[in-house]
Length: 451
Ligand code: MG
Image (cartoon, rainbow, N blue to C red; front, top):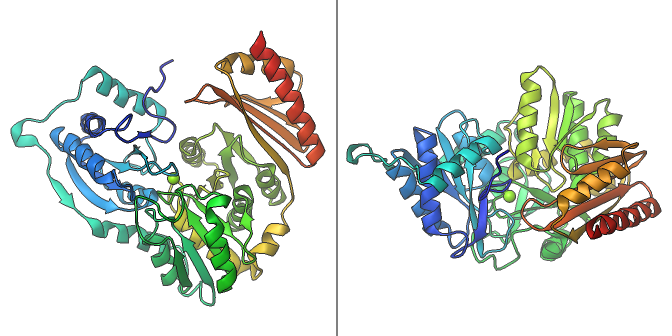
């Protein structure tokens, strides 16, 4: 089996000037133009290195004979929306939630999904073997600036909601100075919400907070939600494909609970499977089961979720929604990728339908206790083998590492794809059971590493 060397589950990413250089961006552009003939849309988030890397990427694409539409700074889901069914491919210069010194490139397929594993391996092979096909003088590509295309995405999101749905709601948007700074306030305002912003100026130095919307980074948002009496607060990561929420009391809504609330609303509209990675909390499964449907689990990575949703639908199986427990949610009636602004708009819909505050909706969900841990070891495969043997008589899923499933509890052990460590997640209805299972697994992992 071949493995990806350069690209991770979400594209190429690295520190600018070290792993991520204009020279690499140009080679990626030329390799992409070798694989996908036609016009390629390029976008970027707000990072300071975006113009340098984007220019190199575009040069590679045009040198490879494809024309470029430069959509400027926009959210990743906006680029995916623009590409879908209209262009040969897309390339987004972003490092998503990573700190400002990082940047990267995400490739988008003509159907608007992120490039899958096999195609990425092909692209890497072209790049490593130096097999980029460069165009003759009379076939070089041309660049067309098109910053207005982002409006198609805004209109696309708005088309799913009745006018005036957000009237009477005040929403605080914290885009973290990232790519969502324009779209999300524009969408929520058009829905009738009164919109207040924090960290609303695009700035690749991310002066207000880091691009990861962590509870620690959102303290200012929490204070602003409370002092303004807002209906809720929403925060994005750097490229605005994820949304996390603050309730009207200023409390962070854990992302699996956000997912569960959306699952309930979506299943009531259209019963269908819920697709999510094996690392997703049982709160989502319990809500799906209560609505009379079930889960379809995938490996960890939004691309696997999006692809599986498409596969199920193509085989005639209804899908209500998909997503990850990190605020990256996918609505099949909209598009097959995580979408931050769409999720913010869906929250307006949820609160409008339920006529209850977000705090009480979240508090009414079942509670689970989750422990996340990592163990440094290069022997990931040995650990997985040992645990597979140890728990062979228990219910298990082996699509990504080992997931041991018990009544009201589970544990997932998977080696990291990029670092020498094993990730361990344990969840249970009871705190004590979670602690016991975590201790048991740590012991077993330590023993299997020593052998
Ligand atoms: Mg992201």
